[in-house]
Amino acid sequence: MDRRRLLWPLAGWLSAGAACFWVIGDTDAGWHLALGRSISQHGLVHENALAWTARDFPWYDTSWLWDWTTYALTARFGLFGLQLATFAVFGVVICALAWACGRAAFIVPAGAFLLLGRLTVRPHVATWAGFALVLALCLAGEGRGPFFRALCVPVIALAGNLHSGAPFAAGLLGLFCAEEFWRARRASELVIAALGIAALCANPGGLFDLRSLFFHLGVQQVVVIEEYLPPSVREEPIFYLLVPVALVLAWRTRRERPAYLAALVLFAALGLKAWRMVYEFEILALPAVAASLLLLRGRAQLLAALAVTVACAADHRADRLLRHRYGAEWNAKVLPVRAAAFARERGIEGRLFNAYDQGGYWEWAGFEAFVDGRVQCFPRQFFADFYRVSHSPQQFEAWLRSLDVEWAAPLRTSPWLSGRDLLDGPAWALVYWDDVNELFLRRDVARFAGLIADLEFRFFRPHGPVVGAVEKLSPQELPQLLREVDRFERTTPGDPYALLVRCAALTRMSNGDAARICDQAAAHAPAPLVSKARSLKPD
Image (tube, rainbow, N blue to C red; front, top):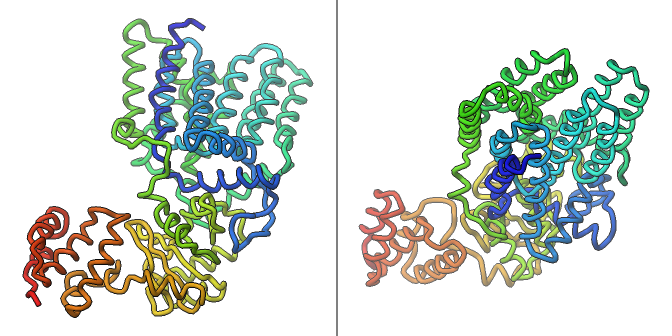
């Protein structure tokens, strides 16, 4: 390859790949690392292992090699090791795309930005790498001997140990082998196709990759997961534009490349069915767009590539690369980082309830979770019950009681399978809360009695009226209210609700800081509530 052409994939890798180093807010990254830790300490996992509600439920970790490797890197280098591993694998994706696009490698930055929408520290990036490598090998081997297609077999075998998406690469290889068999009538092509399927079983779980794939075809009947829903035009405009363009371009070369056309049709259909499959289609479509740009000459070629790149960057909001926070740490605004630290410091343990989206982090933090994102790890009835009781506080509390849940960490930012607004009854004591989580202890669990006595939030709580609640307190209760606000602000500084409550309490106490605090509250809280707080009568 011309050295100048290497600059294009390098630019795409470095620019879009910077997202690998964002502060980590991915909801599944935690359980992947927790599984890697378990594999490192106890060997390969063949059951749930991490969630106490289904600890022994049969299951196999289809991404065991990714989990084990990234845990080892994280244990050595911190979360930077996980981010660096993702960045390196993303580099393989970009290099494979550059190979597949050949002389039109200038289009690769556009492809890199197309992947930005789902570029995160999870093993599906390894599926992209295996898929892109198989695509590049198959395109390079068209009309030639079986060598390049044979090289796909070890790629698929490796990818099958990194993520359950390897069957997509095996299917792509099968289409190209069928094309070559139709042309040359070589039995070796059928053998290679069969080996590609067999390579999916070259892992400790045997056929579990395929079982996992078929399970996820109907996963929406168990849990509604956004990435398995059809993408909207508003969310993926480039995808909906690319589908007809790529199919028309591939149709023009249908006699020379029937397998490529068939693959585009198949993965376009998958992309229309599930948002997560949009990205495999875009990887597949990029060489077709690249070939069309080669028909242009000189500046027109580069201008067209630039226009496509800008469109792809805008589609996936590449401006986030400049505005996002970077760092080898967990995002405490999304994950229960502060709540888990509090529970660890206070020695809280036992049967935990957590939100579906946060189980992975709780598991990485060293707790046995109630639920996590591994839907296959739980009996189907578990999620049916979870949905059923999530609409009624009484049913929800009764369900937790039937499971003997001892403490709970609902998520405040989402109502979906999160326990939000479902645990504020007399049986539960609120001992911690921030802008992401609340933490409740069950009052009848004897070992929690001391913690409840010392830490319960009795006056400053996330539910009910704000200023009105302060107005009803006795003068003797106001200092305790302010102590609770102080404790809350240690983990959630600058919270508008806390400023408003402090404004109201200090006004009632005729404190000299009241005017200053009320001014701060006025900059963040609703004006009518601030006015009401200022108007409270001093005691």
